[in-house]
Length: 396
Ligand code: NAD
Ligand code: MG
Picture 1: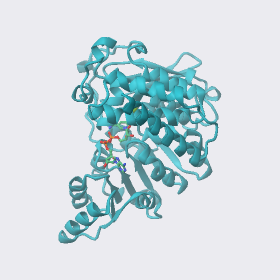
Picture 2 (picture 1 turned 180 degrees about the horizontal axis):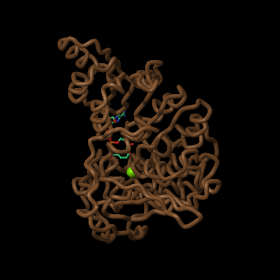
Picture 3 (picture 1 turned 90 degrees about the vertical axis):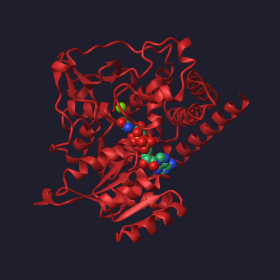
């Protein structure tokens, strides 16, 4: 039958944290999934190892000299994998006719065009790359409905909310009796810290997340709470919610991945161990369920679940994101672009930890948001935000 047919999968950002977990789940179900393409930015050794293991039809790297290196090694190994380079190749492997499912797991704005290409080709799109949606929300969601793509959120919070909503939840939350989305946050490694103490935070400290093992950019975002801010914006677009309908709840154990509150007083939650293979497997198999390699949840070992309000004074990024969403237009794209520059500068030792929120706030104040939601306007806002952030950094 149709459902037994092998699905072709492209993994954008295959060598990252989400990409690696995706390949782990896929490898458990060879009868269901076939790897069509794997992509990476510069990590050619890691991509080589993945190609030898998963035998994709195509592999993509950013630069031609890395692609040539990989082509040579794959040829020696007797593999027929075709190797390409550059942004256009990413767009192609995201929209090829042989592809049913695209895992969008590139980090940052770099993932926007290939993810949008997958949406426009009407694929099942597993969205991990939240920055793409934050930048281009209106355009992105419009493309999803226009091209009949199936968009499944992989971010654990949004995946949880998706599971807690009725199967057909388009047309606004109120129509389905949903009053609020409760977005849980671990609080990051510096939960409870004062502003003074945060001034001395190092990249190593910021990248050591208590519950999740993730790429460096999202680890820093988790530490500043910008990640929760981006997720608030993401939730508004995915679920047609107003920022006021999304309540951030700090929940240090990261066992409840998020919740939906209903008008009759019911609150539905999705629980599980903090392991991204659960939302990935959900997205791959939906509406079916498949084994993900995740350990069963042991509630007796967890013993208790705690909740507290976020500290938006010590962690201003959450507030900045909510304000950007309220302002609308290109404000979220400006927030995201400035944040990407700020995180890079922090990781390179050129900006303090509290400097991240300061820089993003400065850029949002300096640049007026525009109302257009076409791609040119979005990319223009992103470029101007980056430029303004670099100028601010150079001024010291
Ligand atoms: P990562 O840094 O571990 O991996 C990023 C991947 O993207 C790598 O394969 C890298 O080679 C590729 N890449 C990076 N820059 C690129 C560029 N300019 N062009 C093309 N490819 C590029 O990141 P991650 O932690 O796997 O996160 C990926 C995305 O998923 C992010 O948007 C993140 O916010 C989101 N996400 C991650 C997690 C998690 O647990 N790691 C959870 C929720 C959402
Ligand atoms: Mg998340």
